Image 1: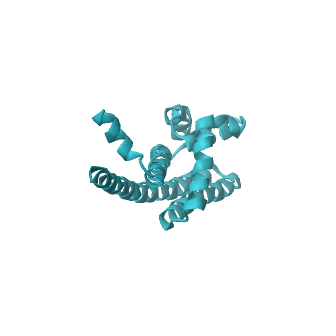
Image 2: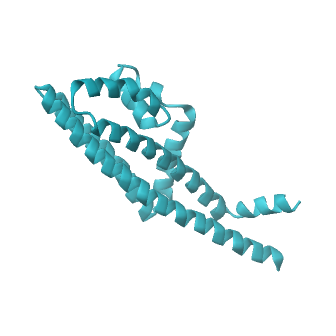
Length: 183
């Protein structure tokens, strides 16, 4: 019975449940950005055509991340919607809802990093598609990946900091709940 009461104390109030939802969503975004960061590091290593084909062949190892799956679907002329699972669609909509509903500066900033990264990638892809030589396209890929690495690193660092704050908040709320129940 004590175990059930201990578990219940983590979800006792609306604020605690909301903090848990925020933690799950932030953890999912961190997972996405870690995989995207790994992909960007490998893309940054591409310096010639052979390395580019090796990178393309190794894209399947990044299938755990949503953004690499979207890129892979686009490169294979598949529908981009095929890259999404229903759970990921739910988490994307939930993420957007949390950013709009909670109106926290950290949420806006992290959402801005996501939008900035997508804009960075789209912009450099447009530049890359207009390249006349392979050398210019490879330089464009290295610039795209260097910026992507910076965006991913920034998101992961700030996201981990925010995750620690959320876990601390949940712990403080749980302690207050135990004090109220004990008295």
